[in-house]
Length: 367
Image 1 (cartoon, rainbow, N blue to C red):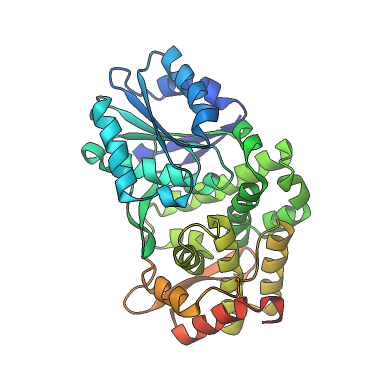
Image 2: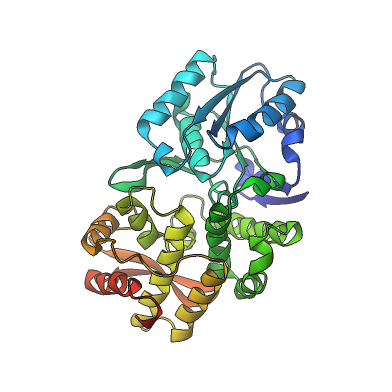
């Protein structure tokens, strides 16, 4: 088992990464003094729940906890206010009180939704992240929790840090190939923003990562979580540095919204968005041409899309970007690469240039 720490003073918490950690869930809960007198609510989704809810519940119950469960539908469409209300109903019926804990057992959608339930139920109860996807190595760390609005992704949310993150990598073996590729987009992102050597390693080891080679995957997740932990430790609430974690997300979130949170996975949308950010940086003279080529190359090696489907409406994408949380004071704000492993937060980018880049993404490499 590997361990990292998100350093937030007296609210610091560990990230545990290793195989078969769900079997030790109860032991870990006791170690972190989660109260036994109050019920624990495990929230999962329709795909993950049947696979891992019994295992997690059994471990917690063996340690003396009372466990309730709630299952949501799978996919981004689950991050809705009415789905949040359903979790609260289950929590009330199960007798959760202010000393209770809500556990997110699943991918990023479950983590965001269950986390926001924990942040808002009785004005905040304990929360644990138990990610079961590669993508969630990013979203499970840092305390950002939210639900979507039809006009904007993650626009209704809070910062609510977990007690700990329990990352059982043995659960990743059940992921379908598309979800593996989608998760690796965020792995690549961590290298692109802060670690050139890691980006080169990801490109060289893409086949091993796609095949879920245990050694390669454990290393990639450890490095990725480590990047996220370092950034969050320095800037918990995105006052400055933490915004670099949004590389590719301004365009990517807009694509998800326009697609109705269905046609593209999060990782696919972010992959296209990272190509867009690199293209924008080159056009602004902020980065040399080879930054776009290198970004495109590593994402392509991971089987991710690097061009925008032609049927996406540019006007709708631009409108969605105007609703993004990073759109402030009438200015478009982007995280742009300066070189591989170094990014800047750039404000005041002309919307006309962004529009041109979105159009160029439909033309692929020749754009």
